[in-house]
Amino acid sequence: MSDLFSKFDALIEERQALLDTGVRDPYSIVMEKVLSPTRALINGKETILVGTYNYMGMTFDPDVIQAGKDALDQFGAGTTGSRLLNGTYQGHRECEDALKEFYGTDYAMVFSTGYQANLGLVSTIAGKGDYIILDADSHASIYDGCALGNAEVVRFRHNSVEDLDKRLGRLPPEAGKLVVLEGVYSMLGDVAPLPEMVAVAKKHGCMIMCDEAHGMGFFGKHGRGVFEEMGCEGDIDFIVGTFSKSVGTVGGFVVSNHPKFEVLRLVTRPYVFTASLPPSVVATAATSIRKLMHAGNKRAHLWENSKRLHGGLRELGYKLGTETPQSAIIAIILTDQAQAVALWQSLLEGGVYVNLARPPATPAGMFLLRCSLCAEHSAEEVETILGLFATSGRAVGCIGPAR
Image: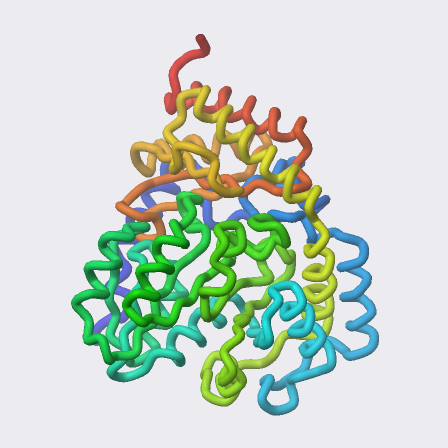
C-alpha cells in the first residue's frame, strides 16, 4: 500500500537534519505569556516581539478588550452556525457597518478569516471563461482562490506594469477579467505601483481587486491602505483585508461599491459553508476599526520606527528586501537556510523574536528574516533590536566586524 505521506519525505528529512544540529524549531515557538503588543515570555525569557503583524498595537487596547468581554457576556461564546443561517448576530452587522464607515463604501462582507475572504472572492467573482490576472508574488490565499474557482489564471512578473499590460493585451477583449493586486507584499514589504497598474487594468476593461491586509491601518490619511495613499480610491472594485494584522483580532472582509455586491452572500462558498466569527471577536474588531479611523499619531510613530530600523540595519551591512523603507515589514535576506536559522536563534536567545521565512513561501527561493514593526514599539525598543542585530549578526558571520 502506498504511503500518502511519502511525498513529504524530503521535507521531513531536511527538517530533522536541521534540528539535529541543535537549533530550536523556528515553527514551533510558544508564547507562554503575552505581556503587551510588543513583549512576551518565550522559553521563560521576556522577549521583544518583532514578528507578529500587530502593526497598530490594538490587541491590548482597553476599549477593544472591554468590547469583547461585554459581547461574550451578552451573546455567549459562539454562533454555532454560518452567516447565511443562524450565524449573523447584531455584532456582525455592526462590524460591517464599521467597515463601511472606515472605507467609505456602500457594502461590506465579513468572513471568518482573511484567508477565506481572498479564497471566497477570487473563486467566486471570476468563473468559467473568465480570467484572473495576478502578480506572481501573490499570497497563498489568492492562489488557493484561483485553484478553487474555474477561471483561467494568468500570472505577471512581480510589480511589472509592462508585463501586466502585455499579458492583458493577449486576452480576448470580450472576456471577463479580474486583476488581483496587493498594496503591500508580505515577504519583502514592498508596495505595488497601484496608479500605473490600475490605469493599465482599466485600459483593458478589467475589474480590480486589491488586498490591503498589510496596508490597512497605517497607509493613507484615514489608514485605509496603499490604494488610499496613492489616490486610487475611486478606481478599485474590491478591497480585501484581514482583522489579524492592524485590527488586532481575527477575521477577514471585502468592501465594495458594486451595486450587485450583496449576491456574493448567497454564492461564496467560504462564506456560506463555514461558521461565523464569535460575537466577542466581531465586537473587538468593530471597536478597533472605529479607533483606527483616528490613529494618525500611531501611524506617524510606526513610520518613524520603520525608517529607523531599516536605516540602522542598512548601516550594519545587512541586505534588505527594499532599498528604502516602504512599509512596516523589513526583510533581511540571508545566503542560505543555515545562516538564516543561526541568526534567528541568536536573536531569540538575546531576547528578540522575528519570523524566519523560507521557500516556497518566499519569492525567488530566498531565505530571510522578516521584521514586522508595531506602533507600540518605543524608540528605545527599536534601538535594542538594532543592538542585538549587530551583536548576533557579527557572532554568526552575517555582517562584518564593527568599524
